[in-house]
Length: 217
Image 1: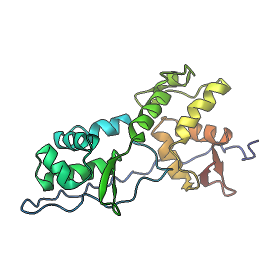
Image 2 (image 1 turned 45 degrees about the vertical axis):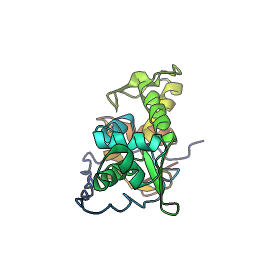
Image 3 (image 1 turned 45 degrees about the horizontal axis):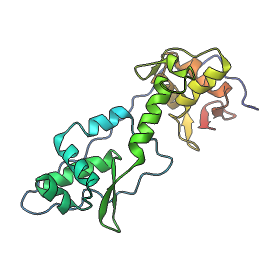
Image 4 (image 1 turned 180 degrees about the vertical axis):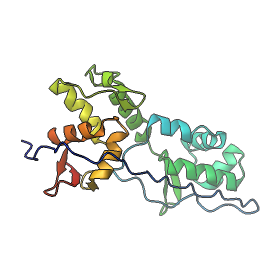
């Protein structure tokens, strides 16, 4: 049973600006083989998957599609990708880095090998289906349009499904200020105060005693 006290009727109405990370500069070297595109960790299990739109954006460039095809056909190293695609090593390195950054591929620093992440497309499609309402016929999709929430359903069963989609915007165990909660809710619905209150009442967000901090349940 949700024991969080009811939301107050007053709330801050101004969402904070969102910072956008700057893409890393491309490797302009052409005379020597480029270093591996990245040695970043594999995506953590709790990381939200890229959306279908994100994946289309990553693969919109020809070099990246060529690199993806090379990995799908068994290439595992930068040299192999460059050889099979006809790309210069520096261009192949940039393409591979974009695939890794987009979580379409991963680089294992110990094995010095690239591989495709098989679940990326499946998870993106599952999230798209959940938001669009296709498949399952659970009724939640009727409340979403162009990636935003049109309204909060009144029927409890559908309401829970819709709010669960919104709640996925919050990471479990992370404490959020009220202003940040307002900003995230505002990405879904113009009336972010009502949406925030609904998430608390549904037991998906828990508010602390001060009434200014929230955590994903």
